[in-house]
Image (cartoon, rainbow, N blue to C red):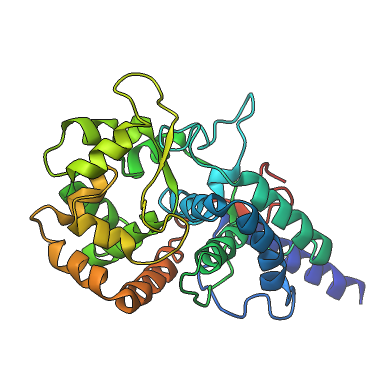
Length: 320
């Protein structure tokens, strides 16, 4: 009996070590927590609903947090790790510093999940669920989130700087950036529709409203009132000034009318390969919603490379 116990202990220990060193989340499932944490989705929703009700912009921020996590070495919650004297994370990468927000909402969800299901649900899965709920709470579509991700024990500020598209991106560079992640041009254009909600800082659209010809003059003038040529870098403007807090297809309607806020937005409708799809989405909200949901599931399937050390963090901001 003692020998059998010893062998079993060695086997279990070996499996734990393997799961630490390798991504044991290669196959995601809608039922991953069916037995270990069956209420996880309702817990996430219970935190997200009041957060978005209190500040609709937070919904957009959580969607962006998910995108910025997945686009850097997979959906592994690496973006949530705080810097320490011996560790440099992704929070201060160029596209994230003083820009990505919503960390405290993820913390609140994690606290409640841990109280219900200790050391079971990854922070990466919480972010994926929160992003889905954010879209739906802003009156957008919903979808089944596949689960089973693990949290990375590493992060890469350099990868964040290299992989996240900027506000000055061209259509060609956007297509290439998404293709590098296995996402098609159509999926890129659908996912860009997340800009139907949220706000951007003056710093990121000043060049467009003062210097680009393919912009509606009335729209440019309105934006210039709160975004001066010098100063006011942090002043905010909605991506969609028609229905800024509703997840709909107005983003594409705006693009057709040359009312895209950032250069990278208007690039999707500027005489290029995506013009036809933008017109289709602008005229058919149902097609956009369906494509967006499918693209979010696909993006959510981006996982860390084999060999990446992973775990289920107890605190999303730090390693166990």
